[in-house]
Amino acid sequence: GQNIDQPTEMTATEGAIVQINCTYQTSGFNGLFWYQQHAGEAPTFLSYNVLDGLEEKGRFSSFLSRSKGYSYLLLKELQMKDSASYLCAVPSGTGAGSYQLTFGKGTKLSVIP
Amino acid sequence: EAQVTQNPRYLITVTGKKLTVTCSQNMNHEYMSWYRQDPGLGLRQIYYSMNVEVTDKGDVPEGYKVSRKEKRNFPLILESPSPNQTSLYFCASSMLGLGSYEQYFGPGTRLTVT
Image (cartoon, rainbow over all chains, first blue to last red; front, side, top):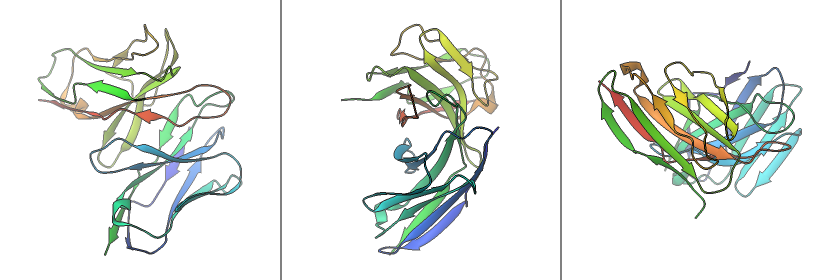
């Protein structure tokens, strides 16, 4: 099965950089997702990593180390609208497709002026 | 517009009264899934489907049923709802193939069972 750990809450200042960590234990690795969820809304896709290393997408970057079972989401130039929960998720299916997705409990990020 | 729709968005019901939450997607996705989200527990998968007439249990299937008679629709059925099924429910869909694909989520259904 999957076990995913993320910090429960974080606070950061507008304009700063914040790193949200995620550690996981899984029986068969098939990549790792990050989703953003604003309060009362549906999760929306941010990134997917299947190979080790850093992937950059605008102000957001995601890093993966498969040997360490570790990922982080890096948010730069924080804006007030980045206040949201950030969910780390790991598929349990191997081979074709992501059959069953296990989510971490999410990290609630508060951006303060 | 590509989207996942759910109905109803809000529902208050009583214990034991059967209900169905509908989910529909217009992206021709093979994969569809239902999740529930509870404070302190996060998103947990209830059931998923990889294609028409193919469904499987997620982490918390007890008390729920699903069906996939058409590719676009994936209703969630609570035959005899109980108060512990009070939750925020999300339907999601994605492509299915080599590698993994992002899931598109519906807007959510907030269910209260009294």
